[in-house]
Length: 170
Length: 234
Image 1 (cartoon, rainbow over the protein chains, first blue to last red):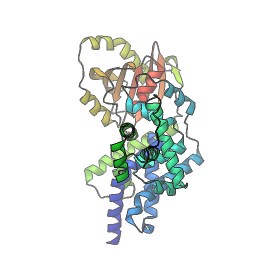
Image 2 (cartoon, each protein chain N blue to C red; image 1 turned 135 degrees about the vertical axis):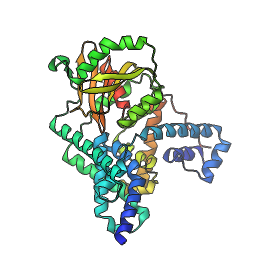
Image 3 (cartoon, rainbow over the protein chains, first blue to last red; image 1 turned 120 degrees about the vertical axis):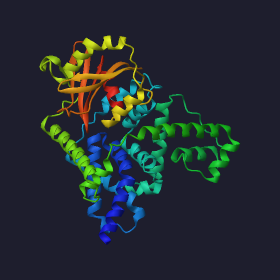
Image 4 (cartoon, rainbow over the protein chains, first blue to last red; image 1 turned 60 degrees about the vertical axis):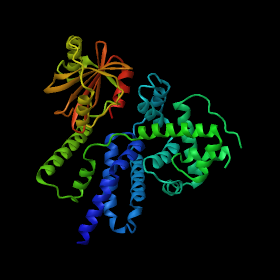
């Protein structure tokens, strides 16, 4: 009976979070197949440690942390074939930008350094607050705020290369 | 709250609404414009981050853990999709990825899928285009979705949509006029190609690659167009 309840709870969690975890995984590794493997591995580890989960509300953050660790482990095993120079070349070639906004922005996101991209992903995809992101990636909340600001500034410069208007103190 | 503080907070969390965040732009038009522009960019960033999720992902996860007791048919369907996934993984393991190394068609026989597709395009596509059988983009998007692929809604016009022969079967032939130029996409739902291969033949480049539930061949005049359209296919 208890096992059935736990299984049902786990099923609910898988259905609720597998899509967003896949997207987070995709942006970590930028490979569709590896992203799905990471999601599978994340839930496998989550199921192994399911009995240790005391608070259901913590499940989402816990899953993201597992996935992040799995990705780091994968990176240790093999360096994923990502060629940053090639992607920078693509970023320079901005023809047809209006027609392919989402595609262009994906390119821009891909060249954003991981230290900036990751807090942004956790906020946009996962909906986490700065304090939660800070705990997940092991930096201070202030550092998360700085990275989020810089990430958005960098993307805004890429999306619209016009100079930003400066704020005046009022 | 002053302008600097307001803008800092907008860049940290554009969607957060607080009393202070609401009050400031009411008395500062420049900051109101700034917030609007950040909100616009944020929507674009969010849209770009929402990459398509493979169909049946949650069910595959649950099946792996034996959590769900689905009915017989869905078990078979899930088993088939798992087999397909394992098949792709096996093929990837067996055949080393060629990355973007462009292989000359001379290294393959004329029957090799990507080479045969280029020949088909060169021999038949101009005639098919003259028939003016513009395709319904909805049909194209549905066919893409069956293979777990997608293209942006504004990819361009579908100049032709129909069946075509591919090595060992039948494919969906889509001729697209995009802002990057003319491209041909051949969707092959029933075959899993062994590996991703980029082939150059005559004046065309083609990439043939497996997906989770089939394969595709993309043909364009230049490598850069090929690469960019293929990246959009995910």
